[in-house]
Image 1 (tube, rainbow, N blue to C red):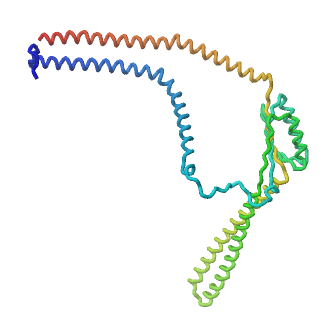
Image 2: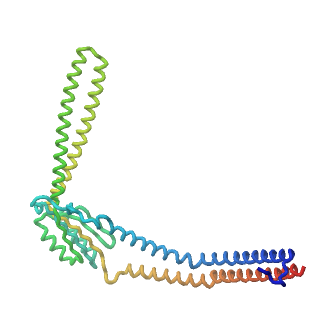
Image 3: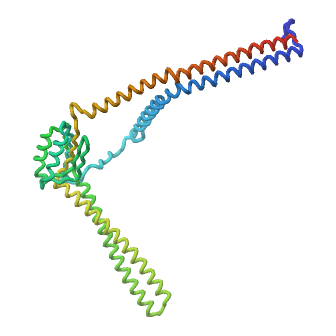
Amino acid sequence: MHLPNNLNLKPTNILKIAGLAIVAVVIVALAVRLVGSSFTSLVSKTGIDQGAPAFNGYGEMAFDKASGGAVGLSVRNVATPAVPPINGDTTVGDNAEEFEVTEYSANIETRQLENTCNEIVALKSRDDVIFENANKYEKSCNYSFKVKRKSVGEILTIIKALDPKELNENTYTIKQQIDDYTSEVEILEKKMSSIEETLSSAIKAYDDITLLATKTKDVESLAKIIDSKIGIIERLTQQRIDINAQLERLERSKTEQLDRLDYTYFNVYIVENKFIDGQNLKDSWIAAVKSFVGDINKVIQDITINLAGLLFLVLQYIIYFFIVLIIVKYGWKLTKRIWKK
């Protein structure tokens, strides 16, 4: 490969070219550094901060959808079970309807909250209605009570007369709970009987051993027997106390469940819904005035502080421009001077 004849590759010329290249690289790097830092600062103050929340929101939504969709595909979906699963809500036997419990829930909207709430409160005076919970607020009230089964139709008529927006009925059986309580009680009673027998046998055995140790005058063995007897009596007695507590709890729960068979439960929620609500109108006006003041304040900020900030930003770029221009100008002069030497 032959080099052109007019290309002068003297050592001095090579050093000049290398020096010019280094100076050019330094100037370009300085310019990129100045412009890049300013651009990053501008973007971080404006677009990126505002765009990030929206991106995060959609990201979370997409993540939720992906997580929810992934649950649907599993081995249980693909493989067909040989035996169909048993529904845990099913009851054994043909007397489930004998243990049915009914609940009603009513949502009522009214323009006269005080009068409507008082109509429900008036049911307290009835012997066949027992209130369990009552709450009254500024614009709503709610009540929970139970009614003897023979009076359910009459109470339903009173509630329907209040024109409820929703009136829901829920009927289900508690036979499985009753059966569970009964089975658990039987297990605990058998365990209690076993503990009683063990305790009685242990006491008799220790008495026999104690008598033998006393006759042989073995003091050390007698002391160990007494300590062991006290320990096992305390342990079995504590187990008996725990089982008695469980039996009392189960009996109380079973009684509460059986009590539900004699009553029908009602949950009534009443809310005020006026055509013209002075408080809501007042609140809407307050919100509108606050929004108006916020808009005016935003405009004033834009034409004062934000405008001043924009002017300083423009001034910053103008200064950068003149700095680069001066560097290029004197750099070019220095380059020509070095080249001439």
